[in-house]
Amino acid sequence: VQLQASGGGLVQAGGSLRLSCAASSGRTFNSYALGWFRQRPGKERDFVAAINWSGSDTYYADSVKGRFTVSRDNAKNTVYLRMNSLKPEDTAVYYCAADSYGVLDSDSARNDNEYDYWGQGTLVTVSS
Image (cartoon, rainbow, N blue to C red; front, side):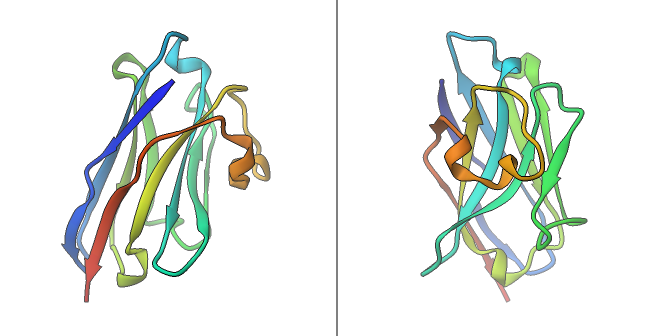
């Protein structure tokens, strides 16, 4: 599967953005679990959020819980990350990823080795 992330940009602290990740796949999109990760300047890549194949289970990093929402539209082969109340520390390159197994739990969702496919990143910059 090929993943294309978009929607990044410059936003003021307290603002919102919605990232999208569109997938092109020879396999049914709704069989994949999907995740979002980010890499902040000078830091390693971190887990942000994930959603199982059905959309019934979602997982979030503590740092974004209550502010970010992950969702998917299987008809559009797209996963979204709605980011509200953005903070300067949310500044990062955001990546989407797909897991072929389709089902993640709280531990596996956070492990980037679980994901088989990665999109290019989209840069989010939050100004103070």
